[in-house]
Length: 202
Image (tube, rainbow, N blue to C red; front, top):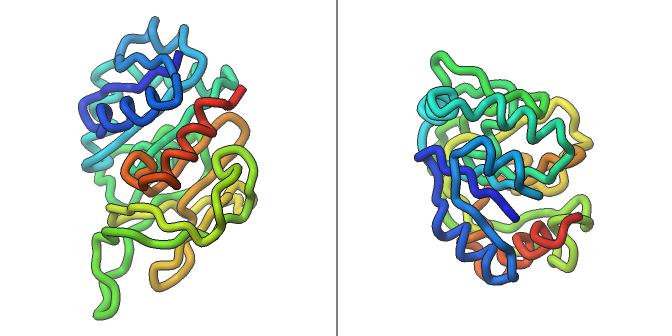
């Protein structure tokens, strides 16, 4: 069973449909007992950092997520959900992140050449072809919609970069913790392959 964590800030239904395509049994939930009993979990996210962390706090989900991360069960953060896995964000006025990954989330600097938010299709440079990127071609196009990007302290956890004026980490993996800044559920065949790989993770 894959728990899709519903805290009111995620694109949960399209993620759910994509996972079900590969035979995954899924449960959209914000209940601790459901998340505790799952084999894997997805933390989606759309919106503002402070609002997302406040919702996780109000729904009592932070201890549940910490327990999940420590359990070694695979946890996938998508877009804002990925950013919440880090310690802090320049977007946040008051809230800290979950801190599962060391590093900070930074805002793209406005410029005449680059629009913020970074929205649309862009190529990724795959640094590690295992796990989520198994059988995914380097320089594949995926769909982005974000104004902030993660800056991990440990560069070794970066498994893919994207170039938007400069290279930034768009996918990370540390143990059982996975994160993608793009939207695999909106990235057609390439993104669906990544989600299939996540379903197949032991």
